[in-house]
Image 1 (cartoon, helix red, strand yellow):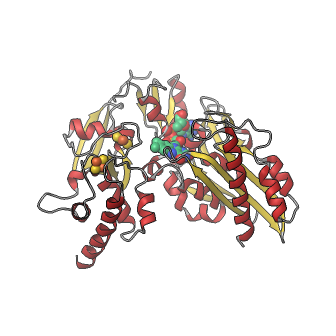
Image 2 (cartoon, rainbow over the protein chains, first blue to last red; image 1 turned 45 degrees about the horizontal axis):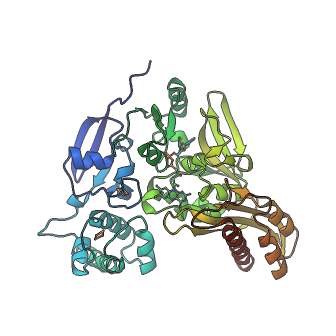
Image 3 (cartoon, each protein chain N blue to C red; image 1 turned 60 degrees about the vertical axis):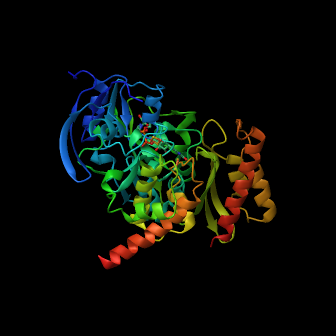
Length: 167
Length: 284
Ligand SMILES: Cc1cc2nc3c(=O)[nH]c(=O)nc-3n(C[C@H](O)[C@H](O)[C@H](O)COP(=O)(O)OP(=O)(O)OC[C@H]3O[C@@H](n4cnc5c(N)ncnc54)[C@H](O)[C@@H]3O)c2cc1C
Ligand code: FES
Ligand code: FES
């Protein structure tokens, strides 16, 4: 016999380096878990229908729209959100480049853009402009017109490659 | 947007998955969730239970088996786009997968989910049609293979029975074929306004056999039989190219919408087919 609906599941997730196991209902979206349960409100929800990419986080290194995935789908995975990227006094190279290249205005889309850019640059630190535009296909920014975002990603890639050579 | 409640199962074998679906009437399979979860959020679907296929080993991987390429149903678009075996034996499938949606969608969405969902403007249906692939399915009654040509029946309608699960897609390896996929994406949604998948086998400078499949144009993806018949056995002259691409939507009820009228779609399908055929002629 089947249990009733909304059966909770024990899910182990590592979020920004911290591992937790929690019993969670199946209808809980990753975006809701991050924002409402963990209070990691850096991940923004824009469209809530998988169109805008503002909610993008990394799941085992891959960019994923957190508004369109259930937490119960992700047992044993590692999640990185914008809070895990850098600190105000120690920005991640992508954050630094976005600041320097003026790649944000209102900042609403920025957490998702940053995470999408990090995934792209981890795969290839020197993408062409066309590859950057393709890589950022899943995000929508209503302010910048994208030019500065593309410039920032190029700049960030150079920064990440340089950091790797030094480190 | 909070989802309604439902039961969630995460089986680790195919038998278990099939049994759980039988025990929960109305249950839906969950693969990448890239089509099903948005439908549930918009309350266009409210399944009482989801059976998640992500833990089912039998649906994972890409292999060569005898003389077919076996692509597990849970293969994600991103993996399909980059897999060396897919590149070698079914390059148009890789090309189509690399153009689905955006990187985030390709990181989650699967070939099984895309074919089962059967969006009339989806990319992979055209790809499997042009490759003469077979959709391998399992159910409480056992297994069967459904030829791609008989799989797509209408918008979001397929030959799958509700209790059948796609296990894999198999692609026959019939010698060297030149193949390509070309898509005219809708600028906002990214789905195909027109998508043309073509695979040609050559004997010298003649086309020995031709498979041309079209998506985005009618209520389901289809094979352009008149185009194929015109090409078969012929030298691909400029005149034949124009003639064969001009009939690519013949016999189909072409649809129109706010973005692209039926007339425009028919024209765009012809132009895109001509470009694909020109490419396949020049390529090699
Ligand atoms: C923003 C966005 C843009 C997109 N753009 C495109 C595009 O340009 N081109 C394109 O082709 N697609 C596009 N898609 C759809 C995408 O390709 C989906 O991945 C695909 O349609 C569904 O695959 P899924 O694995 O996510 O399936 P799910 O959403 O999990 O399931 C879809 C349906 O298939 C059923 N199902 C899943 N797996 C199986 C199985 N193994 N056997 C039987 N039934 C099964 C489910 O029950 C459900 O009915 C887009 C999606 C989004 C969100
Ligand atoms: S909020 Fe998730 S894609 Fe827009
Ligand atoms: S900075 Fe305002 S939406 Fe991108």
